[in-house]
Image (tube, rainbow over all chains, first blue to last red; front, side, top):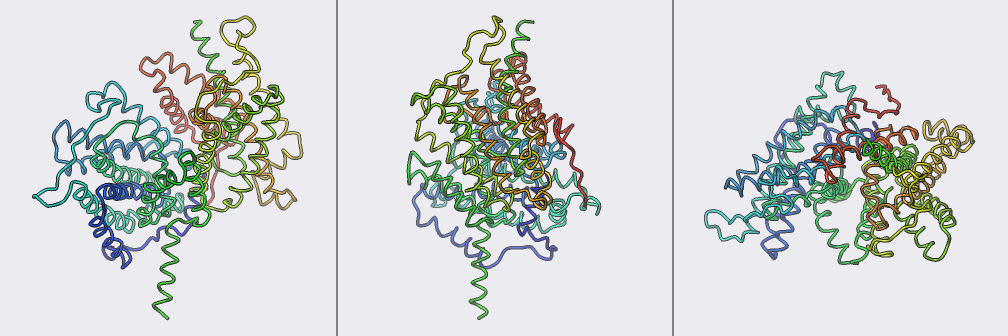
Length: 338
Length: 292
């Protein structure tokens, strides 16, 4: 049961650094951000949509990373929080006519409350047991969304259709393009928030719990509070991603938020590198593009191709994209300091 | 009253399947401390092999034995090829490995045998058991096989040298290695046995749910639930957990009006989480005390 915590610790975890400045990242991240800003100018609308989905999943993977990489808790139920966020946005927009941008913080807050509440009973569970509990949440969610009681709001099995927002202020941008930049801004805000969260006092408390719960509590860390807080924050961020996802796809339905989504987010985290926040975007790219790639290699065996790619990654890069980044950085330093 | 007895018996019968899956889950969990997410797909693949052998004209019991042997070998090979190299990798990497295995097996089975639903014969027949209307012979057979399996495992772990070595390798690998036990092969053996037990579960449930590549999805979840409920360190607990989950699932589906078929699974899982919150190591699991 402690195996999970031990191994997460074993693989160069997030460093606990004191908060001296607001972290904005280094040159590499500036390059990545510039690429993200410029790239869509040369793309077709469909590819811009795919890039938007990458950013949205990156937010969700980031949220899982805060939970697992930060506080050492393991969740297979992120799809449930994503669904709550998506439905919150969808219902507010379609039933109440709320502006799409305003629905996102509301979705985040509702999911925060939801995650915080779920974190309470989950406190007593760890490792595999927590995985099963969150898994149960993920399997229950599509069924709950289909229930007759809520059909008036959720549209039942059929789901809800959402109108795509136009670019504001008469900006000469296509809907896809506008939504992409809108998502990009939000994901950057969330990224900066997350990096600083992990560097803050609360972040260090979470990491102390991850590394050794008993020692942390002996040092006066309120274990229960920080564990539930980690669940709440992770759920809240996932909720924002869910809301954005609903707006981008223009549709919510119970079967879009099954356990498969939760597994995809989990794979995104592993492929990106557990506890390494920039890896979230690499992980998100993996879950958006690799299934398509596998499909194009062989229709009948797409699952097998996907599985083999995944195995290749975990064998060659057990620490995910973070490993590539470290290697590149190492070469770069050598080159510069020669 | 008849309905109640009937539902409880039917629950015990499906519980037998969950118990088999849970036994397989516990075998691997004991060996490598991970839940095998691909266990259900492995069992499904084994069942397809049995079906194929029977299509080629082998009688049921010969196909049964051949499938056990092939599954055992398959389990050992998967461990050697895929999970031995990952033995020291982080838990989450291992989970990703299980998911990859799941995708591969599911896809290969789908391509080889396609997704149409196939009949699978029952060795026990489907007539009422001993003339009673409450339970069919196949259901009685499922319960019987599970209990025999549990007894065999008990005898194996309690009274054979290999069983003792496996238990030693699972509890204290370093010390086991010092007394000359090949712990690495004990893990492979655990995988082989788990694959064989899983194949029995698959062959028992195939006559009920019919044979197709996605047949084990739900069963595996119940198997996990049963194993966790009973305590992941106890094969006996896994079997009891299986029967409990089966009975509870059936009763909830019958007597709670809103539940029906759709919500059976969430309700069963909710119950299990409730149990776990009260008793975090499962009903029969050992509490682990940690030192700092």
